[in-house]
Image: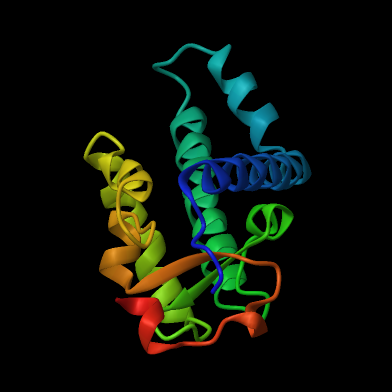
Length: 161
């Protein structure tokens, strides 16, 4: 039986994913000049510039969409994991060890927002639940396994007792 992906492995994977997302967002911001536009408009009189709020809103919106698509597309892909999870050897499955759909991965991503809003307790639950599930995993019906090969996971009756 494969072990579940524990709290610290998931924390390390999240840090790796955050670095990758920041590099990607920085690249996109550089290409479109968002960072320069924000810094330039901040030097102007706040009453005269409407560029800063719109650029900031664009950056936040772009970051949100990019993060959502990164997690949802990667976790629903045949790899079943983000780059960070792949680096530490974790995969995401449904409760029957099958690959999750894009819709389930999207639900899992938005459930992570709820896990964050309640003082990160939804994430801390990973350390204390039997199957190492956070609130977002419980809501989405997913499991995170410590394995590099999702094909090695087989749903047995004794696994889910």
